[in-house]
Amino acid sequence: MTLTETARAKVNLTLRVLGRRPDGYHDIESLVVFADCADTLTLTPGPELGLATGGPGAQDCGEMADNLVIRAALLLGERIPGLTLGHFTLDKHLPVAAGIGGGSADAAAALRLLARANGIAIDDPRVVSVARDTGADIPVCLASRACTMTGVGENLSMLDVPSMPCVMVNPRVGVATKDVFTALGLGKGELLAGAGDIMLSRGWPADGASFDAWIEAIGAGTNDLEAPALKVEPVIDVVLSTLRATQGVQLARMSGSGATCFAIYETIGDAGQAAKAISQTHPGWWVHAGVLS
Image 1 (cartoon, helix red, strand yellow):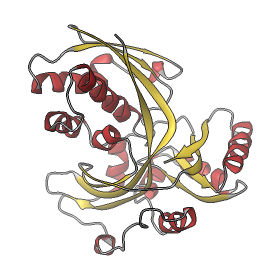
Image 2 (cartoon, rainbow, N blue to C red):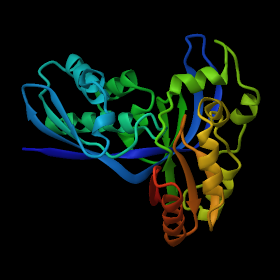
Image 3 (cartoon, helix red, strand yellow):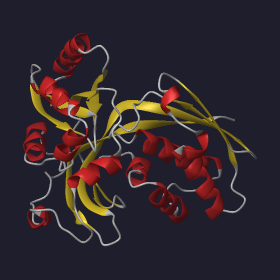
Image 4 (cartoon, rainbow, N blue to C red):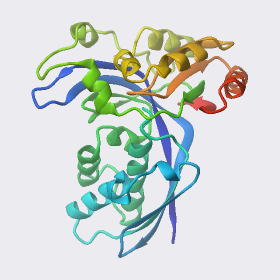
């Protein structure tokens, strides 16, 4: 019996950094949605844990021992004695170190697969705690639903967000999250300027709100990691300028800690035309036209 899960790309429509805790972690507030581009992970249950990688991004997966799929599986095995593990096969398509949670989505898919193989609920506290302990983006990828994410990523509140035609672009340059937070430059216990205004914000549109209402709300936000990411990798500014110059674009922004950027359009047709134009102008970039939801 082989089980399969998709590991959808995560997109931070907004990302505010409230401050840095005394323990060194950063408190954030982010509106997160998921794209229709994904890796695919399969599991053949068995007594031995293993991982094989394939697909166009296989060469970027690094050492197997460091892969988040293996780390999450081992940690879940420690929490649940007698857990059936097995052999994973990862078909890798999402760019790595890209601000769209590719590795985190893979690890979350591994946890969902192991939960299915062992008859465990996905919201079992042991599964949730492993997600939190393996990586900050893994809890939100475990749910793989539109939501707000707060704390260091552990607090989720689900939202009803309309489908949004989009183009996602990565210049095929990896950006380390730790380098971006270092460039942000917050000391331990320090708040980011304006954090009080964030905590007093009016929140997001109500369930059933229109596409235009959401675009207005998202446009009023920002990604606080965009400026420090530009210091680390200036090509991000080229990506953003390219997206903002396309026909029909509603807004464009960087996701996560970069370097992937996204643009939202009113129609799928506009997104497809924009992606085609960008691919022709920058054939070396990773470009995806699709839908965020």
